[in-house]
Length: 392
Image (cartoon, rainbow, N blue to C red; front, top):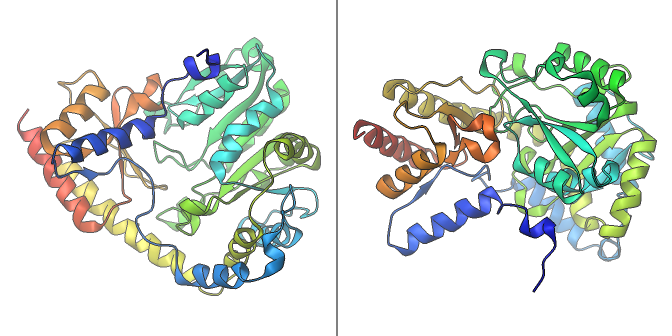
């Protein structure tokens, strides 16, 4: 069989490989603890399940949905967005439902890229950014994220001709995998940079509700003057309400940008199941949502402290996460490969963490730990990591 270059030239998806290694280790009889994937271990809250039960039983929700998203979904998102970020959006024209954030990330490059075009991506970064650009026929231009700059891109280091030739720039704050947070000053600079070079900004804000301190509460690029006309921001219910399997998210931006995405997406899929849309949208304004968010924050603070304490005791170098589910940690000095380190850790201790190079060349000296496991599993995982390092 002859497969397309989209398939033959694209490496297997990082987390699929991790899951395959986990399965192989289990088949060998190994007791495996996985701190490799950012899938919330806690169930979807009961109030969301109750809403879904209501919506599932409405016959009208079982027809084909709107390609753009039901109006009441978009209206509830607009209300939440104004309350949460202080930014006003037109629910009729500036919001669109997506089949999760990954659906948006993977399809947005097709809206802007023609074969041979280029786009800017931060390195390290979510692997789908580069893969989607390649699938669309484009070439990614990597912008390194250095620890000395708090993992924010140095926009001034990008040559003018490179920036002006690119179609868009992908940014992701709170950041996966580094857990960095961007402030208003960065987004002001980014909007000015994009305006100067006629770039669209694709801002992945999937972790907007996962943070630890009020001072680190993530903002939206839509709060920045003139950003809406040149930006699409991506949001997800997966992390906000532990709804990873439901596949529901949304994008926001100017009418012209949303209309362009709608042209593409209406030819690719038939929208999101209306019952899921309506349950998710109602969850945003539910009276139980603030308490759920508070409890989740406290849960992850405990886990963050468990991991941080263990890493400090072992002697690993890292920055305390300000948001998201992740620790971004330097590999031991006697390793030059993050893949080799993670492979040895799995083989010898049955602990899965993610090699940093899977997020781009700038991640080679790091590995990622996810906090999405039960507290006792995290403690066991840190014990195994300690034992492994002491045996080096």
